[in-house]
Length: 552
Image 1: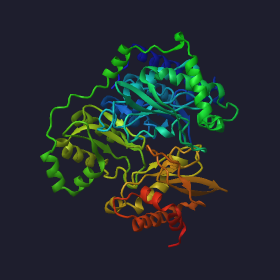
Image 2: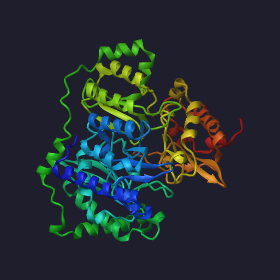
Image 3: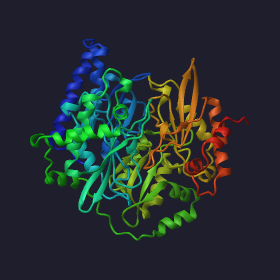
Image 4: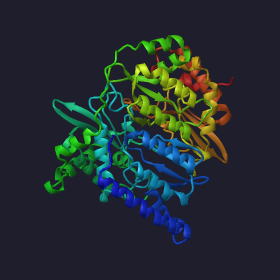
């Protein structure tokens, strides 16, 4: 993974000192909250329902064991013993005292972490495929380019005060595991002969106006990528709405101009760049950054592991976990492991300090010192030998993070909702827990198969409900919480926005209604190999809407 150079170190340390002074002025009353708000937002500090919340950047979702242990220390010493991993591959602490934030930021700086640009109208944390560098189906590792984008965008003077927040995602595999088509800019690495470049999608996003991004360029060579991103950002900065925050995102600009006209303006801006304006990214610098992301030197392993096969034969729990939570690896004899943060009845995305320390230890012992955060709120050990899986699984069981449900209906994405967030108008965590209980039987989950269920507590869609195969949106109606159900969303290479089925349901009605929908799917599928989303697309939504609103 990338290591800070002297410039990174200086930038982060100076920001910690600067914000420490701003916090002291706020606590003394010298700064009023309205004056402090834009300052704290630039440092990832939100004022939520019960306390301040600190959002910490995890660039492209990668952590070292040292960093994970520091997060555990912060959870234990400055929060309530846990942290919450988010859909932006970040981590949030919801109970941080404002007086402690500068000290926490200092601890983060000690391990090359920060909270810069995790909020505010700027370019946010760049995200990527959580299997990057390990995936068998990627053409190249996208993380070096995420890092290059991070360095280019951090404190970029032209883009520090955009019309609205701005999110970029990068992937390099045919299967889109980074949801690039629902980002402001989504980059898909492509290869043309000896030249690596990027397919550029612009104007995606969720929230109150969900939009799938437009393809504006099929191939931008890698050495021109930053120039092309500059062109996009300048068009947005020039024309993006600043008079109405609900219409300020680039997705609105692309929609209003139209894909063709927006693309024309970007290409014109790109062509107009003078030689001295272009970003000279020397090949040596590209190679220097790529070198930080070289794959580990994997010791040779047999493709078939006797220890792994024996454990599957002798332990049904291990076999179930191995079936659901392991993924193909580029090296024979290795796999990538999903550590589910979705125990039935738990809070999606939460990990205790002890669990974080366990993950750090396992990454050191079995995982080449590499941990990833997914945009579906789980953790990944991307490089694990098959021979080591029985011991790894035993440690995960002991830590309470061995739930064998990756990709199944209980592996749901859930925002913090009204239990924490001042923007929310409905609870999402209790609804998710109630739905999990209905589908808690592991055999039932596996019979249902892969299904993405996403829940948001408000229209801002932090739970990505628009792109769930089944989405749930909490809304407030005259002081009572209702939940709208949508069908047919997806965030992969076939990205689609789900359709709202009809009137919202009361919270107590949701679990039973979803069970009727799922059992209808099981009765209508052509075989167990036909997934819910495929049956839905084959038959249309009517049978499932009828089941949703039926009475038991």
